[in-house]
Length: 155
Picture (spheres, rainbow, N blue to C red):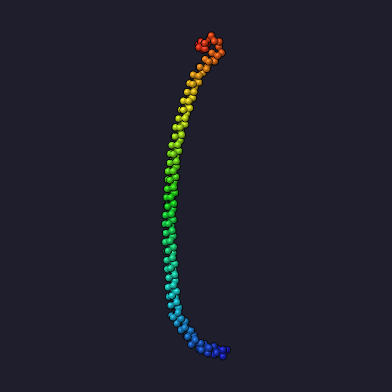
């Protein structure tokens, strides 16, 4: 066992310079590589997060602009529909006015035609009444003997 301990003691004693060299190497790595690397990574992280924030702000601005354009588009559509409705109402009013004039003109013509027909019917009745007296006297004269007058029978 002494022999093993002596060998271990010799190995530990021989490894001291390696351990010191390793500790110096780790320390030098910390100063020369790790710290600059951490600084660069922190800067990169800051730039990346800054770029992400900038992109988020740009997206928010684009969404706000899109919302404004959509609102303008809605207003324009509403205005177009309102103008269309006004024109439709105007056209309907003009059409109704024209139809009213045509109806009035047609009613006037119908009234005039009715009056003409009534006038013609009245004249025809008068003519028939006049002709019926004359015709009845002719019939009576034709049917009655020659010595009796039609005017005497009518009385």
